[in-house]
Length: 193
Image 1 (cartoon, rainbow, N blue to C red):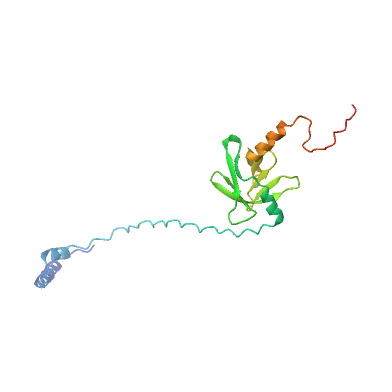
Image 2 (image 1 turned 90 degrees about the vertical axis):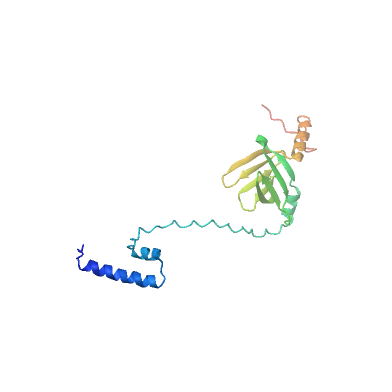
């Protein structure tokens, strides 16, 4: 530090007094002069604010490619689909209805989700409703239907019964034992023991 000598102090005082007089003559207030006489404050540490987190943008709506036009076999399989509500195990339900604006396709609703499915008749006579995205499969046989997750290889719902399936099951149960559903079927050959 530098030591202020006695000769510098009166010189500073004189210069300050002249400045005050000059500024006072220009109409500067005493408060402004007092503020100017104060030593300048040292700058403190720079305070930085955290950057504002941008709001997440809404994802762009997913535009599904148009479904291929359904042809003869698919249209025939769609006509065999049981439309409406299915009562399933554990008080669950599934609803199957036509896909709007896409002949030959059906929509399967389970809880809050809807899957668009392509009806396919299998060689065994079962009707397969195959999810166009490849995630689910609804299998419809004579007495029940089931909903399966094909990616996990698990059933999601089983014992789903449409009104037409319930009627078919009751009709089959009311037939006498041993009577074939196919009229004119040959009796089974007996095998000697």
